[in-house]
Length: 62
Image (cartoon, rainbow, N blue to C red; front, side):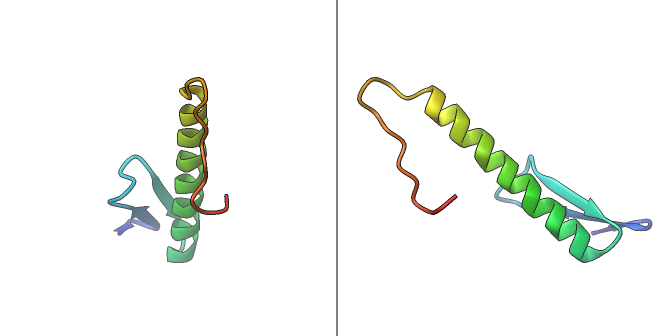
């Protein structure tokens, strides 16, 4: 969406992530980076909660 001179980008799958930029492309790239950081943080949390004998297996390359 447009807010003055800024473009703001949101993702319904990641409501806590957002992006912004002076162009639509910059806003989308900012959103991509935000989502990647959220995924990295969630992986770290998942690894920290692993029990004995449990392992985290990625479904896609990171």
